[in-house]
Length: 367
Image 1 (tube, rainbow, N blue to C red):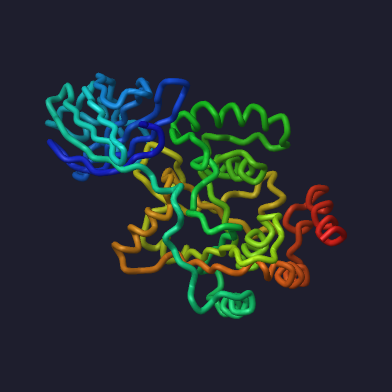
Image 2 (cartoon, rainbow, N blue to C red):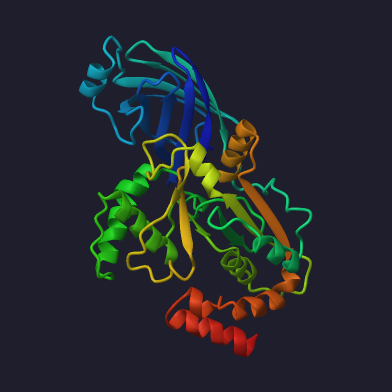
């Protein structure tokens, strides 16, 4: 009942936004709850381990402070010195009431503060609300449109289906990025160190990004999402992502995101957690990652499960369309693959090595 990512706002002594990331472990629900204060005071992190099958429950839990502008915990002494006269809580008594569509939380803290919050579950598993561009529904129309775009302004992503944007990590049942960052990533690092020539320094944000990008390109779930600078590379992944016969009316999707306008309007954070919800560009170093260059790849990093709703909210705030989608018929796949091959975009070029070479020959010889 409590599992997944829930988001909403809180009111009371203070006001702001709440993110509730909950994982299922056996009959328990474990995870992290974040409250970000709207007035600029430190936020609050509460880590929980609760019964998973109880609709209403109360627990007293320790509180950790979140730095108001940096992605890190803030020691109590630092917070007291920076915000004199403010009393910060050490614990919070929290009551959770899980319903069919909402999670209601009330709390009182050891500092005398109190509040209530109503949270809604992620919609990431629901169908996308973005509709394909009306005037661009064929491969020929898309090619003409793409070749006239302003260079280096947009990034592209190909999907064999029109589902919502969601990272590989968030497509699993896991949502708690704190557990992922402090348990899963170090374990992955120990294993991959034996397979790589480079020793990744995970304390360096650039190398952390490169490490996660490498893991992403080899199938490990990460909170990164793959994009390409090339609309035609995106088309390759859209049309080859589904092995089923292409002679039907189903559609593939190519997404176009205005990265220049997004970066100009919003801070681009390179953090997985301990920061407010964000969706940020990540141009990771291509260390040990021979696939990154031919795919002209760029990643985004996020701590948000439902990326579509997050972007929709920014579009509503600004009146600007950051994301556009193109739904093309899968029945054009043979034509698309033939023309992409003439452009040098094949399995062999996208995936250097034995895997890509064999996949490309399989497509050519066995259709």
